[in-house]
Length: 444
Picture 1 (cartoon, helix red, strand yellow):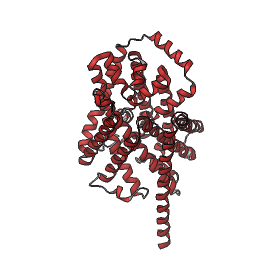
Picture 2 (cartoon, rainbow, N blue to C red):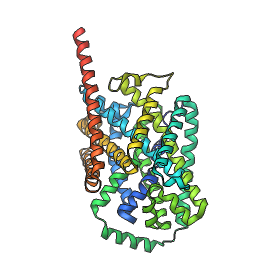
Picture 3 (spheres, rainbow, N blue to C red):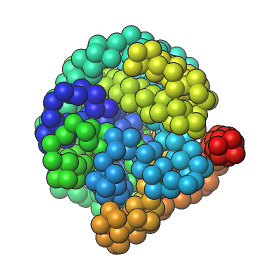
Picture 4 (tube, rainbow, N blue to C red):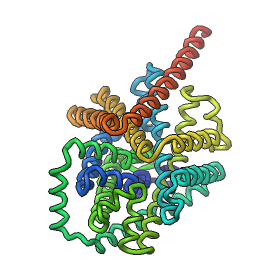
């Protein structure tokens, strides 16, 4: 999400890793922690690591395609170029990528709201949280419409500050932990007896959205030094660093905060628990970390995805009005992203948004793995990692649907309906694009 920052400079490995971490560490850990603990208890760090492994498998295809195509359009461009004769393939990947970003935008805004007002009485009111979430999207929409330069400076400050605050939170939680290491291991062993491998895999799949963002490195391919070396190094380093950050925060929380408190306050679990352990200072520190993390993610998501939406619209796979720009700023695309994310917040809760977001990026990453496998001889990809990626990503999507079916089937139906709507929309624009091409051929 920070790919716009240094257009006139060569980006080295350090800067590229920072770009990827800025995209990944965007409030995901704050969102998934309480939900994960409610499902697998102290095995949460294990599930987070498993989710990181799935992200690593997904990254393999992005790396190979990024090195082959060298196109800053990343996901959408890769699929369009791999299937050049299929308008539906290009349209479908465009729709799914954009709505995946819309779901993460809603997720970040909802998490921002849950933490920002967690210390107030209205923090228990779901409609107050939804209202604040929509308001924060509106603020960053106005910033993005107003000034790219101003947005960039604000984003830089938030990205680097949040990483420092998260490190402090982790250290403080571990230092004030009331659980010693042998007890923690004993608790993990007990949870292992009560939790199934299936539960761990489901949570790992749900955490996938917390790793979304590593592909932002590819958006900077035209500004980086030695892309053949730095694309894989930056992406895999950033995923490893994100796993480490998430595991340390989750472990610190489990050491310091009773699991029942994390489960009870799952939408703002860290803030509520830290307040009990560290007092008002601890609460404020966690709230600051969550607000910074989600704010930078909201800002960057609005910036990057609105431009991709404009590119897709210019290709004819979204309404043409979304391609219009004021200067270089796609104002209508930015506003459309904000409005759609706001609607998603109004109709869904945190878990629905989280599950839809994870499902969508699992699906998009699966399609990337299929595309890379199709041209593996051109991208010089190994067969085994490609097959593992497809199997892991497909499994993740199926497990989320299974979890929904067995717990809240109406949410599963809502997700399926959303995908059907997206599929119909993608097909309709692909049909129009094909018809237009045929008319042009006949006229020629």
